[in-house]
Image 1: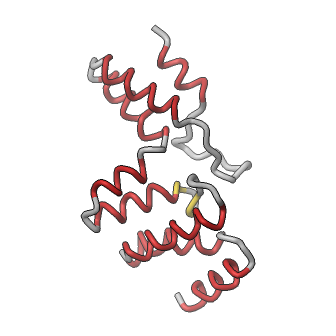
Image 2: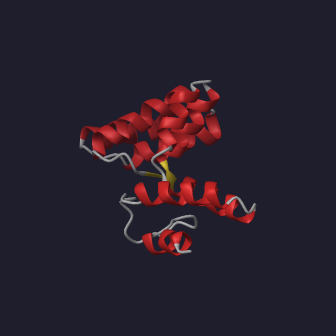
Length: 141
């Protein structure tokens, strides 16, 4: 961790967040340092000016939401993940499978509202990444 912390210091001093993104992921999955995850994701958002960043291939905001949940900060946890269209899209699919068309439509509409984001990884398509046409297809009668 000492080497990673040094890399983070160098990166952040140069206005970059690459090592910080990896550290946030590492703190969540290997160290269970939830306060550290929240701190790092907040700094990532400040450095990049973007609320939707990738921490080792996964949305940093999801990591922050998981950490806040583990810290019993439920309202903040919900607020940190509500901007992600993937969450609403998946909920829409679940409600659709459960034949609850009203809740499915509400969630697909929320996915549509939040779909304008950028992962800053032009060469990587995440497994759960959704696109406007996917949401539009689900909203068709």
